Amino acid sequence: MFRGKGEPLCRKVRGLLSEYIDSSLSSEDKSFVEHHLQTCEGCSKELESLRVTVRLLHSVTEVPVPRSFTVTVPEPKRGSAFGPASLRWLRPATAIVAIALVVLLAGDFSHAFVNNAGVNSGSNATYIQLAPSYVATEQQTMVTVPGVMGQMSLATAKAVGYTNYNVLPSSPPSEAATQPAPGVLGGAGPSGAGMIAPQGEAGVGWPLRQIEIGLGAAIFVMLALIIVSRRQRREKAHAR
Amino acid sequence: MDEQELISRSKDGDVDAFNLLVEQYQRLVYNLALRMLGNAEAAEDASQDTFLSAYKAIGKFRGGSFKSWVLRIAANSCHDKQRVARRYRVVSLDTLLLETDDLPQSNNTESPEDYALRRELGRFLSEGLAHLPEDQRLVVILSDVQGLSYDEVAQVTGNSLGTVKSRLNRGRTRLRDFLLQREELLPSKFRLNK
Image 1 (tube, each protein chain N blue to C red):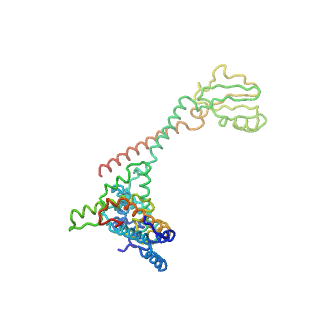
Image 2: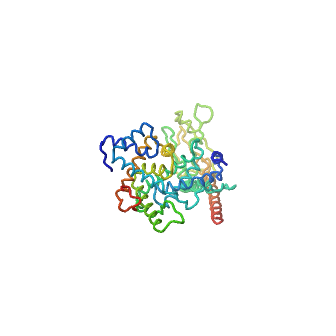
Image 3: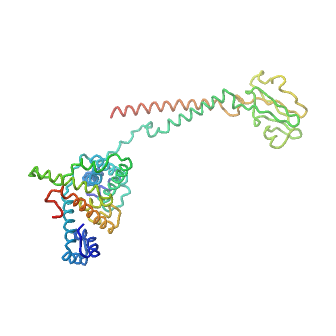
């Protein structure tokens, strides 16, 4: 801003003026600056203007705080297992369980889970179409193989490679249910393709109904928890 | 209770002890925020954020100057606020500066003319500070307005001593140039180029 005579020297001195004002220069630098200032009017003016600027800044006083900035910590939740934080998972979990239940029920009503696959019994393969609720899985269907002692599951017999086996009947839930549709079951030759007997409820092989009941109960409990926690939150907000 | 004990208790979760520290430093923090941001409301937010962050992070405080530590958090908080203000261009900081009642010194014997003069000068200084780059502004405020030593400024900003000195020199020169350019608007007794 203020022109000096020896520009490179002036530039060096001006770089030190701020520290000179704050009296933080070494004695060597200080005497160098002071010597230069005696001969350079531009740098002297520069120093004076900087001093006034710093004095102006020093004259600025602190403004009082408009309010207190003390920190308030929320009170710990007292003995409630149904606090909003602890039950944050509840809503999505309920939704997931509800969706699972709907899928199971839909599958159950449309008999999508029923095993109605056929039984391949060698060259005399016979497709046995039974009513869905009477169909058992290959794991549950027991067979005997000629020349082999004992029984094994149909799945095992297939896995081992036996094509000639006799399917053992198992006890049907009702007499009518065990009767295959006329014309459907046929061609059971000497090789012994047999009827697959019903086993277990709905012929699914896993406790579908129990799972459905369990999921329904879980949804009921979860909904109750949601209602209780919501009521507690409302009461808290009201108390505040 | 001395500061070290208050810090120790705060680390153990004693919020009352921490609030005693807040009361001790809130004026310093608020004034830094006010001069960095140029807006009282933003300065309040930044100050509150500073003490909340400090309370959460007190366990990480490893000794040294608590004042420098809390001012460093305040500087970061101001930096965040300025970044958000720049991104969303909420309001220009230069406009906001005119709203602040930034008055140096006041006493009961002051004449209305002196009051007006002082107020005008405060406004010029605020405008001048707002024209400085953020890093220079922080150093100038910490050193010349809040009276911190070079070492303390270096701790707050996390810069070397050489960087602090260089930024202070450039900041002061820049502010001086700003005031010189508007010298005809300055009260005669405060003119720099007499």
